[in-house]
Image 1 (cartoon, rainbow, N blue to C red):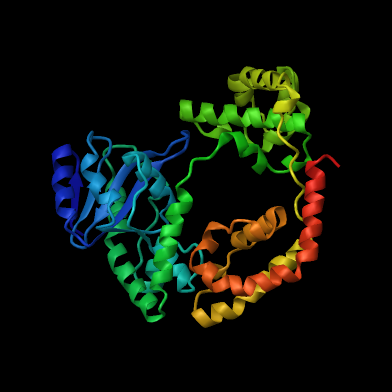
Image 2 (cartoon, rainbow, N blue to C red):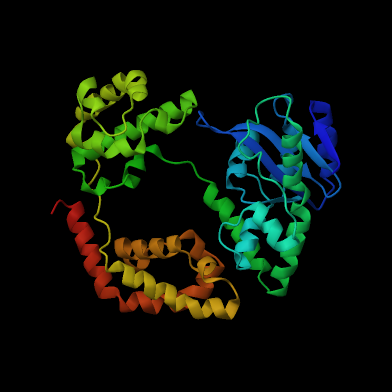
Length: 391
């Protein structure tokens, strides 16, 4: 390996100017996220096939030279399992990176599994073994140990040959256009900011709560999200997810009853207890016309038969195209499609993934299955509407 340490602004600018001439670069990050809301960037690794650059964000103050590399289509950025890296880099530049190629998505298209790690991908495709014993080390400490330096450099050294190997196999199977489309789909799905005002809808069993209880739950989540971001601490340091339902249902009015709520730890009680009680008390004063509507009930168990039928209808297309079944029609795609049809009928917007090549390929096979289940879908819609209307 030819490892080059980039520790000042001038070196970063010089490196970025050279890398801008490349067709592609390998990219990885190391970060810490133990007691913070936002990831703390500890290292950026870039490989160009000849060198492995280790960029130290603890000593560099001007990252603007990296922006053209990250925010232009070229050079293409080669990463593996990159969703968290994208979050880190988006925070660094203020914009979502473009030109991203994720080799984990490539291994999925080649039938190697949906979430193959980098180490396994190298073993299976290049016969290369790299150590992973530094993955949990403290990357904020300086100086970095020889083991950390080697580990970080190896994370980008083999990405170019790995991608080239996978690209050739994708081309041979005529899957490369679909793979690149899914790389963009991944970026599109990452490009959102959660809306704290509707987070209550995703809480486990929230559909069992009354409207007033949903109002309390909503206000707790709005407070938790704002405080976590402002104070840069994990959401669970304020209120754990496992406590949310009970807080909304029981609505404790003092520290003693708050302490009885599941997973309200002594630390949370001591540091956040009074604030939680204030949020609940304020939410209890909200007028009825501001309460959320009741949430619809989940689909019945019988819906699994429809999910299975939809997946079965896609199986011949998997065999025809060579796209693995678990990639072609994922569980979340099926669930989103059915839920949309139940709640909004045939006018329901398609899930994002089915608005691209999957839709062109799959919808002619999926629509007859949905039409055959129309009576069940209508009955489920009525039941969910009845629940929302309070009976």
